[in-house]
Length: 238
Ligand SMILES: N[C@@H](CCC(=O)N[C@@H](CS)C(=O)NCC(=O)O)C(=O)O
Image 1: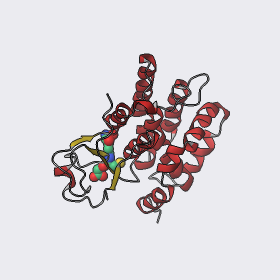
Image 2: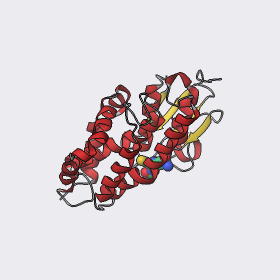
Image 3: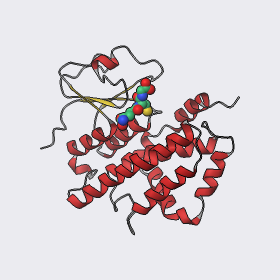
Image 4: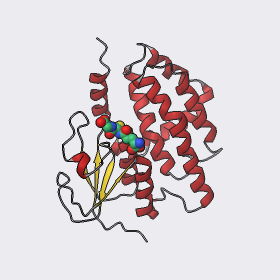
Protein backbone atom coordinates (compact mmCIF):
# COMPACT_ATOMS: atom_id res chain seq x y z
CA UNK A 1 0.00 0.00 0.00
CA UNK A 2 1.26 3.47 -0.86
CA UNK A 3 1.58 5.94 2.00
CA UNK A 4 1.83 9.07 -0.05
CA UNK A 5 -0.54 11.19 1.99
CA UNK A 6 2.10 11.90 4.64
CA UNK A 7 4.10 15.11 4.57
CA UNK A 8 7.49 14.91 2.87
CA UNK A 9 10.27 17.47 3.29
CA UNK A 10 13.33 17.25 1.05
CA UNK A 11 16.62 18.78 2.16
CA UNK A 12 18.55 19.49 -0.98
CA UNK A 13 21.13 21.72 -2.72
CA UNK A 14 21.01 22.81 -6.36
CA UNK A 15 24.65 21.98 -7.00
CA UNK A 16 24.39 18.40 -5.70
CA UNK A 17 23.90 15.63 -8.28
CA UNK A 18 22.82 13.17 -5.59
CA UNK A 19 20.08 15.47 -4.34
CA UNK A 20 19.04 16.15 -7.93
CA UNK A 21 18.24 12.45 -8.37
CA UNK A 22 15.56 12.71 -5.70
CA UNK A 23 14.17 15.96 -7.13
CA UNK A 24 13.76 14.27 -10.52
CA UNK A 25 12.03 11.27 -8.92
CA UNK A 26 9.65 13.54 -6.99
CA UNK A 27 8.88 15.52 -10.15
CA UNK A 28 8.21 12.30 -12.09
CA UNK A 29 5.85 11.21 -9.30
CA UNK A 30 4.17 14.63 -9.31
CA UNK A 31 4.58 14.47 -5.56
CA UNK A 32 3.65 17.33 -3.34
CA UNK A 33 6.47 18.06 -0.94
CA UNK A 34 8.39 20.83 0.76
CA UNK A 35 11.90 21.61 -0.35
CA UNK A 36 14.61 23.23 1.73
CA UNK A 37 17.94 24.40 0.32
CA UNK A 38 20.94 23.56 2.49
CA UNK A 39 23.92 25.86 2.01
CA UNK A 40 26.69 23.26 1.87
CA UNK A 41 29.34 25.88 2.71
CA UNK A 42 27.46 26.98 5.79
CA UNK A 43 25.11 24.26 6.97
CA UNK A 44 22.55 25.15 9.61
CA UNK A 45 23.60 23.83 13.01
CA UNK A 46 20.36 21.87 13.43
CA UNK A 47 20.83 19.90 10.18
CA UNK A 48 23.18 17.09 11.25
CA UNK A 49 21.72 16.45 14.71
CA UNK A 50 18.09 16.69 13.65
CA UNK A 51 17.99 15.51 10.04
CA UNK A 52 21.07 13.68 8.75
CA UNK A 53 23.96 12.73 11.07
CA UNK A 54 26.16 12.30 7.98
CA UNK A 55 25.54 16.02 7.35
CA UNK A 56 24.90 15.47 3.63
CA UNK A 57 22.13 16.19 1.17
CA UNK A 58 19.80 14.74 0.08
CA UNK A 59 17.74 13.79 3.12
CA UNK A 60 14.04 13.48 3.68
CA UNK A 61 11.84 13.99 6.71
CA UNK A 62 8.76 11.88 6.12
CA UNK A 63 5.52 11.83 8.07
CA UNK A 64 4.88 13.39 11.44
CA UNK A 65 3.35 16.82 11.87
CA UNK A 66 3.46 19.47 9.16
CA UNK A 67 6.24 21.66 10.55
CA UNK A 68 8.57 24.22 8.95
CA UNK A 69 11.69 22.53 7.47
CA UNK A 70 13.95 24.52 9.84
CA UNK A 71 12.31 22.91 12.87
CA UNK A 72 12.07 19.24 11.94
CA UNK A 73 9.85 17.16 14.15
CA UNK A 74 11.33 14.22 16.07
CA UNK A 75 8.16 12.41 14.99
CA UNK A 76 9.07 12.30 11.29
CA UNK A 77 11.19 9.50 9.83
CA UNK A 78 14.55 10.80 8.55
CA UNK A 79 15.94 9.05 5.49
CA UNK A 80 19.21 9.73 3.66
CA UNK A 81 21.17 8.44 0.64
CA UNK A 82 20.03 9.38 -2.85
CA UNK A 83 19.53 5.87 -4.21
CA UNK A 84 17.53 4.82 -1.16
CA UNK A 85 15.41 7.93 -1.56
CA UNK A 86 14.81 7.44 -5.27
CA UNK A 87 13.50 3.94 -4.53
CA UNK A 88 11.49 5.30 -1.61
CA UNK A 89 9.76 7.79 -3.93
CA UNK A 90 9.15 4.98 -6.44
CA UNK A 91 7.59 2.88 -3.65
CA UNK A 92 5.42 5.75 -2.45
CA UNK A 93 4.22 6.46 -5.98
CA UNK A 94 3.98 3.12 -7.81
CA UNK A 95 1.84 4.71 -10.52
CA UNK A 96 4.82 6.92 -11.48
CA UNK A 97 6.36 3.92 -13.25
CA UNK A 98 9.74 4.86 -11.75
CA UNK A 99 10.16 1.25 -10.68
CA UNK A 100 8.69 -1.20 -13.19
CA UNK A 101 6.57 -4.08 -11.88
CA UNK A 102 8.42 -6.77 -13.82
CA UNK A 103 11.25 -8.29 -11.72
CA UNK A 104 13.56 -8.52 -14.73
CA UNK A 105 13.13 -4.83 -15.54
CA UNK A 106 13.63 -3.94 -11.88
CA UNK A 107 16.88 -5.89 -11.87
CA UNK A 108 17.95 -4.17 -15.09
CA UNK A 109 17.23 -0.74 -13.59
CA UNK A 110 19.27 -1.57 -10.49
CA UNK A 111 22.12 -2.99 -12.54
CA UNK A 112 22.19 0.18 -14.64
CA UNK A 113 22.42 2.20 -11.42
CA UNK A 114 25.27 -0.01 -10.27
CA UNK A 115 27.19 0.86 -13.45
CA UNK A 116 26.43 4.57 -12.97
CA UNK A 117 27.86 4.30 -9.44
CA UNK A 118 30.90 2.20 -10.29
CA UNK A 119 31.86 3.65 -13.68
CA UNK A 120 30.16 6.89 -14.63
CA UNK A 121 29.92 9.04 -11.52
CA UNK A 122 33.53 8.29 -10.42
CA UNK A 123 34.74 9.34 -13.86
CA UNK A 124 32.91 12.67 -13.54
CA UNK A 125 34.36 13.21 -10.07
CA UNK A 126 37.84 12.26 -11.32
CA UNK A 127 37.76 14.59 -14.32
CA UNK A 128 35.94 17.65 -12.95
CA UNK A 129 36.76 17.60 -9.25
CA UNK A 130 40.24 16.06 -9.37
CA UNK A 131 41.50 17.09 -12.79
CA UNK A 132 42.15 13.56 -14.02
CA UNK A 133 42.15 12.65 -17.72
CA UNK A 134 38.78 12.45 -19.48
CA UNK A 135 39.61 8.97 -20.78
CA UNK A 136 37.69 7.47 -17.90
CA UNK A 137 34.68 9.62 -18.77
CA UNK A 138 34.70 8.10 -22.25
CA UNK A 139 34.99 4.65 -20.67
CA UNK A 140 32.03 5.51 -18.43
CA UNK A 141 30.05 6.65 -21.46
CA UNK A 142 30.88 3.38 -23.22
CA UNK A 143 29.77 1.37 -20.19
CA UNK A 144 26.43 3.21 -20.13
CA UNK A 145 25.99 2.92 -23.89
CA UNK A 146 26.53 -0.84 -23.78
CA UNK A 147 23.58 -1.19 -21.43
CA UNK A 148 21.14 0.84 -23.52
CA UNK A 149 18.42 -1.27 -25.10
CA UNK A 150 18.33 -1.88 -28.87
CA UNK A 151 15.16 0.13 -29.03
CA UNK A 152 13.59 2.24 -26.33
CA UNK A 153 14.02 5.79 -25.27
CA UNK A 154 15.51 5.37 -21.83
CA UNK A 155 17.94 3.26 -19.79
CA UNK A 156 15.93 0.06 -19.74
CA UNK A 157 13.16 0.67 -22.28
CA UNK A 158 10.50 3.19 -23.18
CA UNK A 159 9.68 4.25 -19.63
CA UNK A 160 11.69 6.72 -17.57
CA UNK A 161 12.77 4.88 -14.40
CA UNK A 162 14.96 5.16 -11.32
CA UNK A 163 17.90 4.24 -13.59
CA UNK A 164 17.46 7.44 -15.60
CA UNK A 165 16.91 9.51 -12.45
CA UNK A 166 20.18 8.16 -11.02
CA UNK A 167 22.23 8.91 -14.13
CA UNK A 168 20.93 12.25 -15.42
CA UNK A 169 22.28 14.64 -12.74
CA UNK A 170 25.84 13.47 -13.32
CA UNK A 171 25.63 13.78 -17.08
CA UNK A 172 23.97 17.22 -16.83
CA UNK A 173 26.74 18.53 -14.56
CA UNK A 174 29.48 16.99 -16.67
CA UNK A 175 28.08 18.79 -19.73
CA UNK A 176 27.83 22.15 -17.95
CA UNK A 177 31.36 21.74 -16.59
CA UNK A 178 32.88 20.73 -19.94
CA UNK A 179 31.07 23.46 -21.92
CA UNK A 180 32.43 26.12 -19.59
CA UNK A 181 35.85 24.59 -18.85
CA UNK A 182 34.84 24.35 -15.18
CA UNK A 183 37.00 21.82 -13.40
CA UNK A 184 40.42 21.04 -12.01
CA UNK A 185 41.52 19.73 -15.40
CA UNK A 186 43.76 21.49 -17.91
CA UNK A 187 42.09 24.38 -19.77
CA UNK A 188 40.79 23.10 -23.11
CA UNK A 189 40.09 19.55 -21.92
CA UNK A 190 36.39 20.35 -21.56
CA UNK A 191 36.20 21.19 -25.27
CA UNK A 192 38.31 18.13 -26.15
CA UNK A 193 35.96 15.87 -24.23
CA UNK A 194 32.90 17.35 -25.96
CA UNK A 195 34.58 16.94 -29.34
CA UNK A 196 35.48 13.32 -28.55
CA UNK A 197 31.86 12.67 -27.55
CA UNK A 198 30.68 13.84 -30.96
CA UNK A 199 32.18 10.74 -32.55
CA UNK A 200 29.55 8.57 -34.27
CA UNK A 201 30.61 5.75 -31.99
CA UNK A 202 28.75 7.50 -29.16
CA UNK A 203 25.62 8.22 -31.22
CA UNK A 204 23.39 5.95 -29.18
CA UNK A 205 24.59 7.44 -25.91
CA UNK A 206 24.11 10.98 -27.23
CA UNK A 207 20.58 10.29 -28.39
CA UNK A 208 19.79 8.91 -24.93
CA UNK A 209 21.47 11.79 -23.09
CA UNK A 210 19.67 14.33 -25.30
CA UNK A 211 16.32 12.76 -24.43
CA UNK A 212 17.12 12.92 -20.73
CA UNK A 213 17.85 16.64 -20.86
CA UNK A 214 14.54 17.23 -22.67
CA UNK A 215 12.53 15.31 -20.09
CA UNK A 216 10.16 17.75 -18.30
CA UNK A 217 11.09 16.44 -14.83
CA UNK A 218 14.75 17.14 -15.61
CA UNK A 219 14.14 20.57 -17.13
CA UNK A 220 12.02 21.57 -14.14
CA UNK A 221 14.66 20.56 -11.60
CA UNK A 222 17.98 21.45 -13.27
CA UNK A 223 19.01 24.99 -12.36
CA UNK A 224 21.79 25.54 -14.87
CA UNK A 225 22.43 29.17 -13.92
CA UNK A 226 22.92 28.25 -10.31
CA UNK A 227 25.27 25.37 -11.17
CA UNK A 228 27.25 27.60 -13.56
CA UNK A 229 27.69 30.28 -10.95
CA UNK A 230 28.72 27.84 -8.20
CA UNK A 231 31.18 26.04 -10.51
CA UNK A 232 32.41 29.40 -11.83
CA UNK A 233 33.51 30.38 -8.34
CA UNK A 234 34.80 26.95 -7.34
CA UNK A 235 36.85 26.43 -10.50
CA UNK A 236 37.86 30.01 -11.25
CA UNK A 237 40.97 30.00 -13.48
CA UNK A 238 43.00 32.93 -12.31
N1 LIG B 1 26.14 8.83 -1.00
C1 LIG B 1 25.42 10.08 -0.82
C2 LIG B 1 26.28 11.23 -1.25
C3 LIG B 1 25.65 12.58 -0.93
C4 LIG B 1 26.70 13.70 -0.97
O1 LIG B 1 27.92 13.42 -1.06
N2 LIG B 1 26.23 14.93 -0.91
C5 LIG B 1 27.16 16.04 -0.84
C6 LIG B 1 26.80 17.20 -1.76
S1 LIG B 1 26.79 16.69 -3.46
C7 LIG B 1 27.13 16.62 0.57
O2 LIG B 1 26.07 16.87 1.12
N3 LIG B 1 28.31 16.79 1.14
C8 LIG B 1 28.44 17.31 2.46
C9 LIG B 1 29.22 18.54 2.51
O3 LIG B 1 29.46 19.13 1.45
O4 LIG B 1 29.59 18.94 3.61
C10 LIG B 1 24.09 10.00 -1.59
O5 LIG B 1 24.03 9.25 -2.58
O6 LIG B 1 23.14 10.67 -1.19
